[in-house]
Image 1 (cartoon, rainbow, N blue to C red):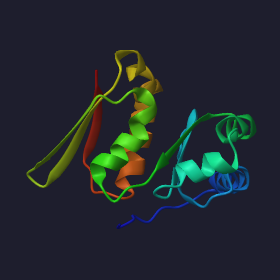
Image 2: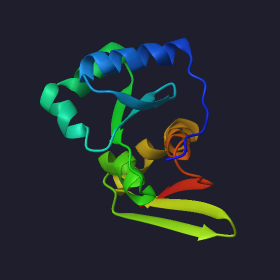
Image 3: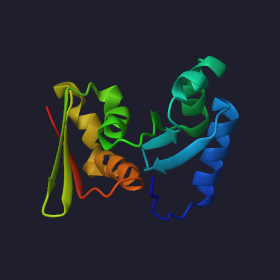
Length: 144
């Protein structure tokens, strides 16, 4: 998988250290905004993480004081998108490849749309940033 170059600030470095200490697995990616932090772990690592520490999410939330989302990476775009949006009741993912563009529309439970989009679109941007670190994606939007 091709990864884009990113810069990590001290706060993110601290969050990575907290994650690895609590989850006891290696972290692949950490993307965050003011309200949420998305930790991306390796393929098939979620089960291992919960086996090692069933309280991992609540402990992370307590230490970091943000909404916590953990998703497994995948070499497959559809699977990776589903993993990121899993918590929001994904019922459909449409990926279109046209004119050198990759656009994704994710269908989620109606009551989850606000959470997916986030204040001023911050969460959907965060999800797009995470996906874009592994895949060349032009847009991600959400629908019910």
